[in-house]
Image (cartoon, rainbow, N blue to C red; front, side, top):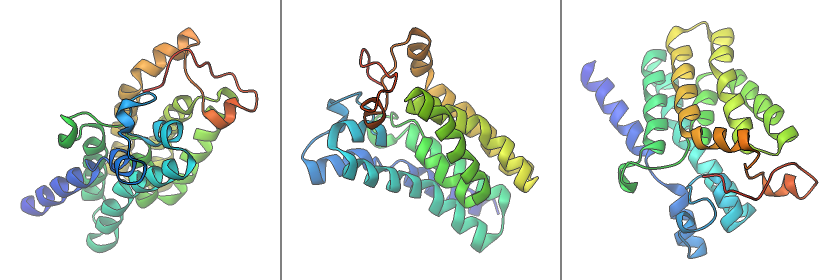
Length: 211
């Protein structure tokens, strides 16, 4: 059992560590998105750097990094404890990728994908929370943090499983940590908003980029 847990955890970490934002940018757009916009490898910087199609591809692939490993464990091994560990490793791999000198994205899409695999109703709650945070403010970061505050509550409500809820708590801590600079900019009114929401009269300021 120890060997199986270790193999699954390492495999999930390596899957999570694939920097799809960098791969998509280089292969299809001839650009390193780390050198443009905020420098982040996630979907939001991809949106600002390579456009909607590229950003959609990055978002989907990053979400699948969390969804596929967790779903395989849930469906094939029926082990919620291992599924929670695998989900956490995928998110940590994305945020601290060994291919990028242990730097990476903010873990939002990968974590959302994992939550959908663990409990799809909880995934829907996360999307609703993201909309509640992002639409009024135009800040993706606000929606992402609110979604992850809601995640452990939703996972406990729908599953009553302490391991899955524990994953939600860990993911919330990681996402809040990766958004620490965004929190400072929001408090200063300097956060950069979602481009297509800003164009419709949102509040987001262009004074400082979101990493």
